[in-house]
Image (cartoon, rainbow, N blue to C red):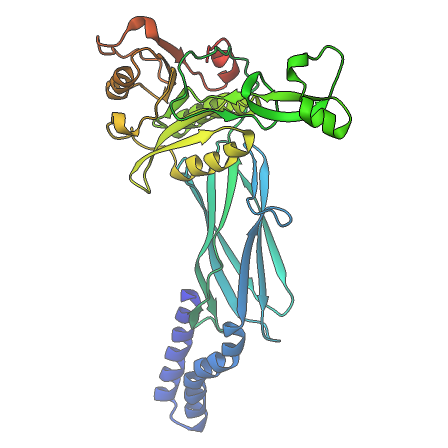
Length: 390
């Protein structure tokens, strides 16, 4: 727009010099015409300038949460049209794409005109790391046909898309925990068990079923033999402590490791808990994962916070009860969280999964027999996690 203004002022200067040197009707006519031209241009362009409309969308179809795996692409559409039958002057827009997890930011500028027919500008969102990607249109202005005046255009709502962490096929070893659940047992909705205090379902008698599990009253009432399937208790004695510090690649590797282990546990209906620091709420958050449907909302929350500095000092008050194994995922372990875990759960096992190859000295108060350290190498996450005992 500044080029159009400079060109206009140069033309106006020439007309003024012509009027000074050649006083007459022609020079006066040209001077008046030059002074009125911007006003006429604005009056003619104003209806179309006010009618510019822009919308921003991501993904395909009506999915509420556009998402893809790392390395894949998510279509981003910028649709432009004019609510009037006229075409506007040039519209300038700047698209900003920011990954809140890694802090990476990209900008792209657009220059177009908005007519009655809709135009669609397509862009492909890609990311080599997981994260929440926020797309917004900024610095949105429309000019008149001469490019001398500009008016702001109402910006469309921002669009959020997700690049999910990679879930690797891992095969850790599961140990039964001797620690009782301090908050009561929950029972599986998919698998039967052997807890006689909870009824899972009723089914017809099959050869080999125990007679002690026959529901005699209901069988007599319905005229066929029904067998009780008992409930399968779910316990959450495993705690993940997430400290997603370090650079973007290290935080990405830590989240991949957590997603792989958590998905493995959720698919087998092995309940577990996740403790992390929420910068927006300014406090620690503890989430419970009992089934695979709980994984996606947790990922969204973690990706929105992003990698950050190490979280503040941990207190025993925020830790849940009944934990027999604590897994601390971090770039480099801090002494304070490990001491708090040791004091809160003196008989629990502790595992540190870290991306830093430097072996920092840990406090002497920690029991060496209860602590296991695993070095997480980006690109070799399955090899690093296989053999881990949960």
